[in-house]
Length: 48
Image 1: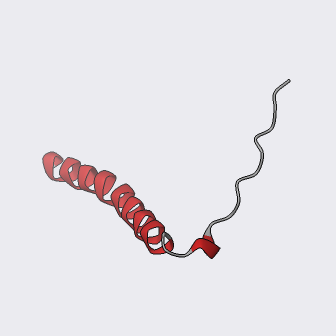
Image 2: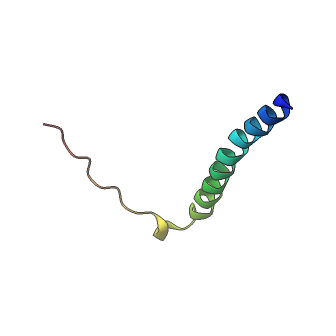
């Protein structure tokens, strides 16, 4: 029973972040052809 719980936890720890990464990449690929969805980069603050 202990191995079953550990297997479920490992599956959850892999599947949940992976699903977020796949969703992010899908949106990124969908927006690649749409230049209006790209926001201009702001100037990086100087640390002087």
